[in-house]
Image (cartoon, rainbow, N blue to C red; front, top):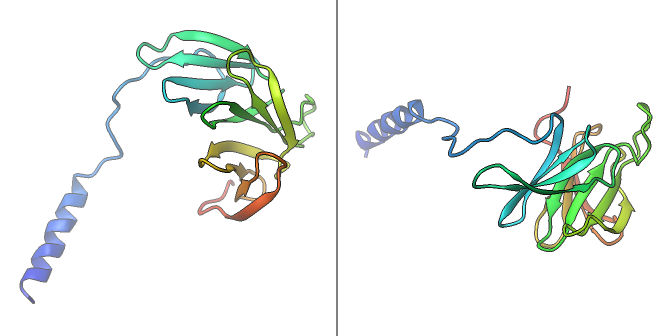
Length: 167
């Protein structure tokens, strides 16, 4: 056993020398210059652009824009897809003032861009969104927290500090 353990450690250390972050399978240019959110609906990629105030539906095979819908937010910073609807986080609360940070979360019909529901973000400065199958998650950019919340009323389920902070 004493001879096997040092050999095993040496082999594992050698494998880590060949590790790399990943292989690019496909890439294409984004349709806008200020892409701030991204999600996948199982078929297409959705991108939000904070400068164009648009949410693009992208064909993942060729990168072409299939269609776009107006962003309900002045400063969209994150997108999520729950299996039926898009969710967009707005860091500015719909007001274009540079000092205004009062996040709003929008539930959007991806077919026509209709706002189905909106709620005050559990964070005044949301940064991104994710859907876990039951709840939404966001990154609180100012407090460096991950927040799980109910998409119906915005109730925080749990939150914890992020493993890294925004400096």
